[in-house]
Every structure is written in C-alpha cells, then in structure tokens.
View 1 (tube, one colour):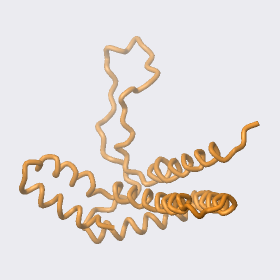
View 2 (view 1 turned 180 degrees about the vertical axis):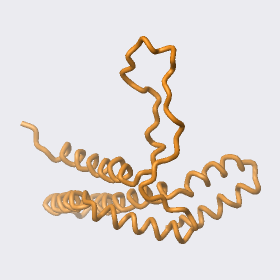
View 3 (view 1 turned 90 degrees about the vertical axis):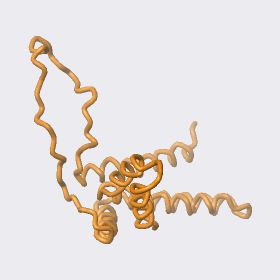
Length: 167
C-alpha cells in the first residue's frame, strides 16, 4: 500500500546518508516488476491467512465456528490456485508498475552469457550444475509456479498436517 513512498525514501537515501550503497541496491531490487508481482501474491495470500489468525485469537470463539473459519479459509486458498487469480494479481502489479514508471517484463528471459564447458573436463561426465542460478529468469510463468502455487501448497499442506486426525 505504501510502495511509492518506500521508493521515494530509497531515492532520497541514495543521494544522502551513510547507507547510500545499500539504499541503491535495495532501490534497484524493489524497482522491478518481478518484485511488485511477488508483493501482490504475498499480500493477497497473507491477507486471507491473517484474517483467520485474528479470528482464531478471539476468546469468545467456539470450536465449531473455528473449524468453519479454518475450512472456509482453506477453500479460499484452494480457489486461488488458478490462472485467473494470477492474471488478476498480474494486472494489479502492472498498475503499480505503471504508476511508478517501472518497466513491465512479460515472459522475458534475462540475457545470459553463452554456456561453455570447461575443456579440462572433456574426459568426465558432469551430472549436475551446482551453483547454476535459475532465479535470473524473469519469466512470469516461473513466478506463478515458484511463488503463488508454492506458497498456496505450503499453507494447504500445513492445514492438512494440523487438521488430519492420525490413527
């Protein structure tokens, strides 16, 4: 909700103060469309879970009502696991990006160096690429799978873990 104010403060801190390098790094990181869309995903999910958490802390809440609240929140999270939800979040993120003059990347892959293999390993078979960073990709499909669906799955998994009666 205060994204534009945070950007303003970071811009001011890049010009003055003893933390200019840190502020510049933060400004560069938060001034990306990827960051904005992740913010939208997390805000939407956490808003649902936070409201449940507040209700469950009420001293007047009775068990049947609590179970109904938990089940309805679970159903809301299940319903969020759709492409339509991600498209709505993407549209909100695009509005925020346009308002703050941030470039919107759509299904682009970051430019990378050409992959070459070390000639010292010609006689060996390499099974893994330890250290290879896949987070450099700016593909929105990756954000949908790695952020939205992953977070929803973790919340639902936790729900099932604590609500399933073990025999």
